[in-house]
Length: 291
Image (tube, rainbow, N blue to C red; front, side, top):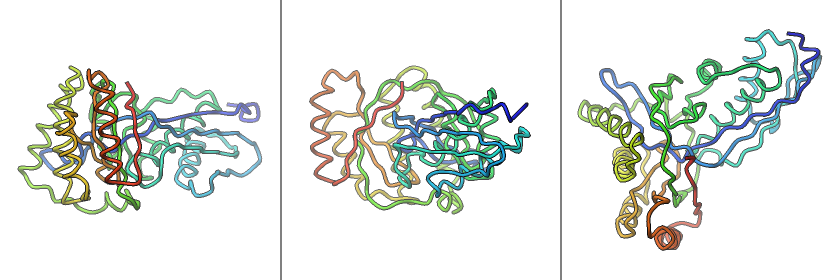
């Protein structure tokens, strides 16, 4: 490829998540996995190739995205620098896949600049070794081995859901979190295996009640690892409102109540949950899943 002629500005984007529907481990050896819950928040990347210039990134603290671009340029033999600019609507350190979304958007921007056909598995290869990653390079809901950075399997598309989200404050370093051994017991691992099978069927069939039940159970099982002080109240609010359950950022600070967009009492339930959750936290956000 003649990189001197490859001066097109490339653009890429990637959605984030609201924590995970499920996060745990699978038999036989406790393999870590998660199930994504994509939401309509995005990271955007713009890459302007500049032959003969060094690689720069803005904001300058997006060092992982810079490393990813360096890897890609080297992999494809592109002797060129340039400016990578990232803009994101995803908050950092909250469990919404902000870093993973930055990386995937950056990879797509570089590919767009040079006319490269980049599939999700190739993005995985570029990310692997940089940090544990959510499966946001896939458009569908996926079961993903986040520490290995590889797909377990695609589950399908979520029915439209609303999440009344609360932030408990602070941030969580997901890299450090994933370095800590989780020491799941055999019974827990078997339960996670059954939960994944149930989630697979529920996503494919659009069974929102089962999805809410599974998300709630996973949030409860995660309490010993990254406890949410508002979990009990959130579960109670969900029950009182007739909502689906709660979803947690297992390695973050966010907790939300799930509501089906097709619920006949959607408007009244959303108003109730927004007011009630607002009494528990000063940081409230309403998020919407990607259909």
